[in-house]
Amino acid sequence: MAKRRVGKSGEIWSFFTGAAGLDLGLEQAGLHPTLAVEIDGDCCATLRHNRPALDVWETDISKLDPDQLAARRRHTGDVFLMVGGPPCQSFSSGGKRAALSDPRGNLIYTYLRLIDKVRPQYFILENVAQLVTAAVRHRPISQRPGKVWNLSSFHKSRTQGDDSVPPMEPDELSGSAIRQVFAEMNGLGYALNFAVLNAADYGAAQHRYRFVMFGSREGPPVAMPPITHGPQSATGTPWRTLRDAIYDLRDAPGPHSEYTPEMARFFALIGPGENWRSLPRHLQEEALGSAAFAAGGGKTGFFRRLSWDAPSPTITGRANRKASAICHPDVVRPLSVRECARVQGFPDEWMFQGSMSSQYMQVGNAVPVHLGAAIGSALVNHVQSGADAASGDRLDLEEMLTRATARLRATARNKRGSDAGQLMLLAESSTEGDE
Image 1 (cartoon, rainbow, N blue to C red):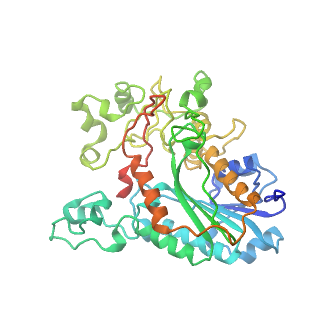
Image 2 (image 1 turned 30 degrees about the vertical axis):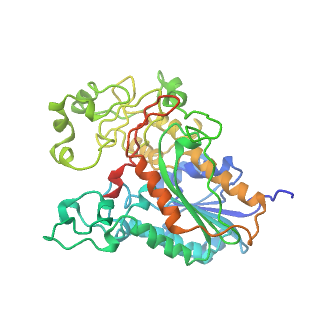
Image 3 (image 1 turned 120 degrees about the horizontal axis):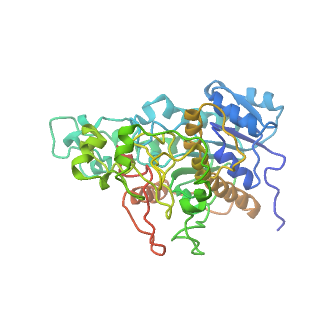
């Protein structure tokens, strides 16, 4: 069977594009976005600087409709692909966990409504991995029965033996958000497949877990990309390490932020691959602050110092904060903007616009380019396989959710790679994501 041409003449519309990490990955797979919709001015400046031929629309997606999009693109036929990652702060383990009650969480529904009106052949939705454990409605830990921080505990007992407050309601439980989102998506009539993917498994030099969903208007769902790196890869290719990504930049890292003298004092006591738990016990509470020290969860993001010989943990947008620090292995400073971009897979010629703070945020909020390339290749392979509408069954929500949740929660445990003996430095994806 001759392979089909994929996206060569079709429209590919990118929403919430940011600094284009996902889009650059799609380009590597042969999928070139024709339109980028982004509300952040610095991100738009970055896109225009690096892709001057790309149609960049600096606007709020919630104000758009299909007629406006078609008119701008002078396009009346099928859109091949819509791709987007609605802002994820509502579901992030580092945020307030407001979930779908937060307007930022509801941008997922804005994106879904646009998909329903445009009816592209395919769509991709990516988000933080914690989407699979988030609740529709957030109840603060202090108001939960037994003040239990881990939402998964309430699947066994919604009261935790504490009758002093109302029991947890179904929409307050772990997984209620993705069930509601899936129900909305299922109503669109697309064949769906979703999973939690680790960027390190696809060649990125960092452990970064993302929720990825494919939608196919006709035919069977798109299969997830096969793992190419790490212990689960078929070839045994090891994960790429921080050394692989940035060691050559150690003498010329480029502009970077600094730690306060107080933070630098603590980092000087922490070795490569360690975090706040390696501080002398009498300094741990002082370093974290009393409230953070007493809070539940592993707090693995606090005072992290990276190791040369392991993948980095998740690159964050605030590299100089104690709760999201990504300290250089050899010197007491955050990774530079260029070092962070390297770990994220951006080419060195990709120039970020705006202040240094904005550049860090653009890099930290991006999807790793390597993961984007794997996602794009999965779609290309699906189309070129010529699968017809009669082949393959639609996938079951509970089966996908069970696999995704298990993958996410497995990241809460420190492990050593079975072959290389590398310490898996945890990303933000820990059981704190159940808050």
